[in-house]
Length: 74
Image (cartoon, rainbow, N blue to C red; front, side, top):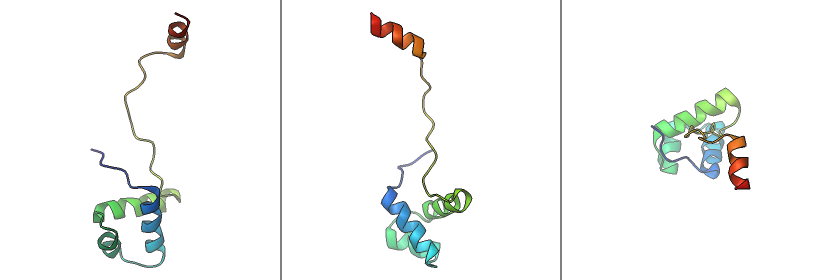
């Protein structure tokens, strides 16, 4: 399941500390976030070049654009 998303500032701090050579466990302790979150953030950075997460899944729309247009006319 998904937890609360890290702020952009925290993600930048994780990556900055990692790039300066700080160990992942030390980053976790310094920033007060779980080691797994630090690890996942760094893995995402290595894979994509960005620490920004992908869009989270959500419920799909029930109405098509045409349905929405028709409802607006009513």
